[in-house]
Length: 270
Image (cartoon, rainbow, N blue to C red; front, side):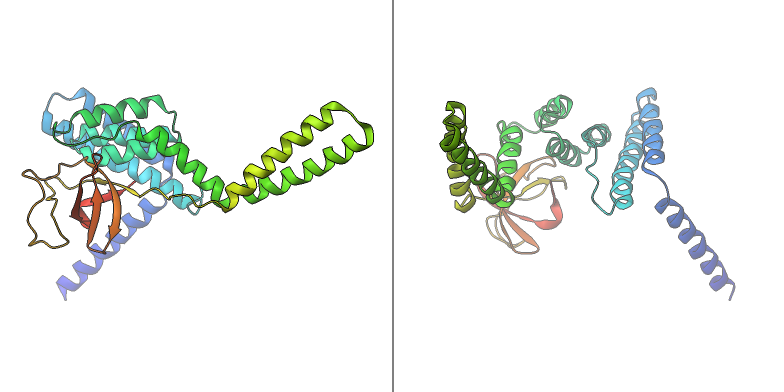
């Protein structure tokens, strides 16, 4: 009976802590993260420094989660917060999560200079044999944006352009003003481009994932018994493109085009 009572008390205490954490605001998590990060920078004990950076990383992650929870996932988290998360992860010697954070920052703001610089620095920490993406972020973000326009908005653009073409054509026929003729031609060209774009098939880019588990073995097939593809395992921080998802296993492509299989538990999606 004594152990049951003690267990019930501990369970209630743990539940109250979880409830309290769930009610903590993003600003509180950020303040806690900043304090841990500052302490990490000020200590000369390497183990304590890593532990403080890890605490800062956890608090930044909680701040992002709390921000999404407070708006039902509709809030676009500031890119700077992802950069801070990446810096804390890098300080904690967790290269994979750092790369994920920097890439997410660039999804929010493709022109964020600090995210670009820190991502390049993180990539430089990988072994020489690991292929790194070349200018993939800025171009990928641009074409991903074009994909969204093609998928959602081209038909609307075509409709508006067609309407404006008709208005300026009628106005030109009525008033014979050269400017209206020019506007009619310009909007007709826009209508044609949008009309074709709305029906054109475009290739959807493969999802980007990052290895977050150190020493992940890249295999030649989707089996733990399959031979390793490389002499060395993939280090945490390796960026990959997903070609095929089989649940527990993913067929992925490295930046140099080589294809391998990795376990889904070893990677995190950007």
